[in-house]
Length: 97
Length: 246
Image 1 (cartoon, rainbow over the protein chains, first blue to last red):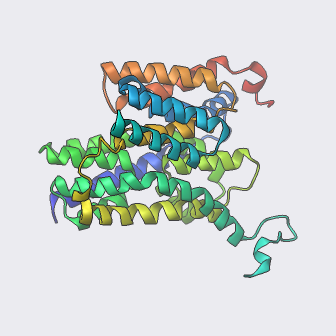
Image 2: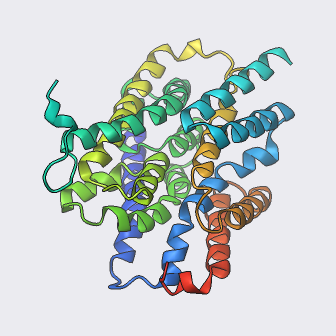
């Protein structure tokens, strides 16, 4: 078997451990403390934001315009519309400006 | 068409087929948004010395876009194998937080259902599960599979198609590929804007992750920024909420 195969197998096992690990640790506790509950409720916004922020800090002006535009669209429309609008905006700006 | 599909049973539970399709409808936009990356991954994997079979195997077994990109990128640079594996792990480390949080939503799944569900726990899968729980509808295994099925099946197929036709993507930058993922994740962030203290959490996570990105570097900015946001949530939580009276 190639080294790519074994790297992939090891990467897949460790990835699975990250996906089940948080639950395995937390499920050892009988009761979840309310503060922990607050922390868990913050997970979506806290983690997902970190996947956007560096792009905001490093994007060219076209990228920033596309992000702001998509953000505004998301206030009124669903996620798919927002994504397609943002994608259209960045492609147009990169092609024509 | 079987009309019973759309009827509620006596217990008030919707039928499992309805639940599957409710999930499927949520999975479709995610499938569309992830398609460019699935194809790009297949194409770049071939560029970096993978066979089409190896690219498909990686998409099928790891099922995590960003970590797969990092994996093939490092492989192309002759980095030691253990470091590639560790980098994949580091990029995916954020899932520990999803895992801890989503256990409250899917803890009632049967053991084997649970194992499969945690394997399928991607960023959008997690976001949809949280939103479903928030809306008060039941998070069932069938619904969860409905979300995951179109995403997973297409993700694996795209590695194959991208591997076969990869050289058709000549200029990823002109197509804005580098901005698609941030735009997509911004949409997920906005989807949670009605939650308590969303603003302070987003600002803390955003600022700290940018600082960490510029100083310590990727992928650690994700875990560090996320912890900052969570810390702010814990600090600013209203006392009555923190005592569980919400």
